[in-house]
Length: 149
Image: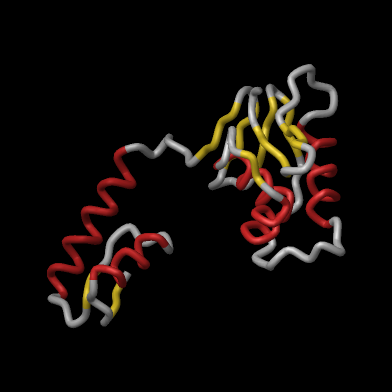
């Protein structure tokens, strides 16, 4: 990330937003090239490594945007993918409907809607149906938790 903002908080916000590096303007062009070379070297060290989340026999490939459970491919919509990613990143935690709505839909939860429950049901049909070990668990009065419980 190239930025004129140079406080520690600015840098931390940049890294939290996904930056691999943070360079404050004005900068020396040679330094920029050196940093790019380092990042390229790091990315070339493990060309076969893929950014994946794995819980039990469920695998979510964040780079290719696909999911597999066991040997079966699972077709997901973009929103289902986001919901599953949020569940997998929070394995073992109880997630309220409000938490899910804020993180997956980026909205404050409207208690008059059941959109979270509907999408959890869609996801359940795709990743749990036909498997003895269920991964999505309802916690009555609390929300949901995910994992090999």
